[in-house]
Structures are given as structure tokens and as C-alpha cells.
Length: 144
Image (tube, rainbow, N blue to C red; front, side):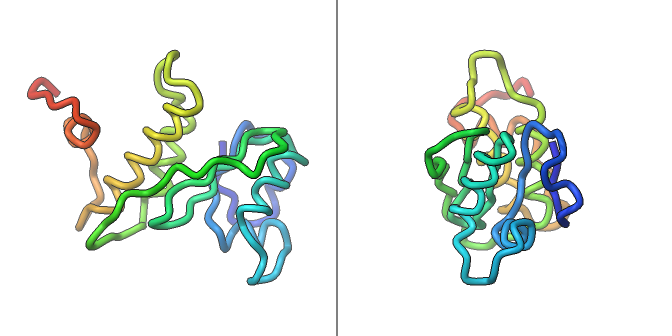
């Protein structure tokens, strides 16, 4: 699992990468006009790694390892004020943790996206606690 900020990790044995659009272009040595979604899908296919492409408020485009499809967009949530610092780190952590055996890839994507959204919506230190997540997904609890 990695957040590659340079080409040094390109093709290295990893399960997944979490990368933003501009990094995907650099990683693929493509120009500014290149579509990062197509680049992510090609990378996932060629290097057999899952690609979680973060697209700011649009959400996360998930391209499965070795897949032929362009990937699936997990839509972001609207934010009035946002700060994206740390949001990708949270998405990466959740992808790496692989929540719950029954969650599957779809659950993993949704949970990573929820954490990412909650961090992006914070002001200050960007802390998110489990009760914030439970409230956000509708599982209100006072015990956490």
C-alpha cells in the first residue's frame, strides 16, 4: 500500500496505490491534459495493482487490479468548506486496513470515502473519531 509521489514506486510489488490526479499524470509521465481516470485504469491493468484515484470533491475512482473496465467512481459528498490535507492519508489507511470480512471492495471504497470526506470537512487538526463516522453513516451510538 503506498501513496506514490514519484515514479520510484512504479511497478513495485504493492497491493494498491492511493494517488491524486496530478500525481497520476506525473506517475504515468503524461501531460497536464491527460485524463487521470484512463491513466489509473491502464496502470491497474498493466501493473496488477488496485488504484484509488482521489478526485477532490468528485470522490474516489477505484480501478481494480488487472481489470479491463475504466473503474468505478465512489462519489464524494458536498462540502461547504473543505481542507484536503490528510484526507488521502485517511483513505489510504482505510484501504490498507480492509474493514470487516463482509465489507468487500465496495464497502472498503465507501468507508474510505466517508473517512476522507470527514477529514476534509474538519477545521484545524482534522481528527475524526469513530462516533463521527457512525453518525455520518446513520449508526448513531453513544458508546464509542
